[in-house]
Image (cartoon, rainbow, N blue to C red; front, side, top):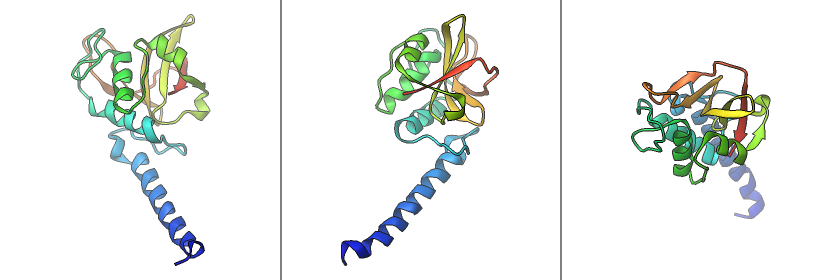
Length: 157
């Protein structure tokens, strides 16, 4: 078969794979709160999001970076490390390292940064539909929550 005759077959295969990928990212594969937004995450962001979701229920511990306990930036560091990307240790350092994006351009797998007076004090991984995976505070655990304020910034790893 010539290369030209293979084009429709390859395009149909690529289309089917893309459709399956979009369906998987937009469906329940990412666990509760998965994204169905037009721009779903790809590659390392998708993997980091899956890793964070897999840690649901892991207890919060200040300074912990996993694999059984996490603080907020420890969860993002661990998740992206498992996805093959390196992040610095603290929420502020992670914010400084990421590419800033607007809320309208956010995708599942992007980092969500909470800030006050120019200082970043919390970070999580955007899960789509206005939710994020994070390890919020002492006495809590890794969980999926609705983003509770518009005073956030987004960064792409």
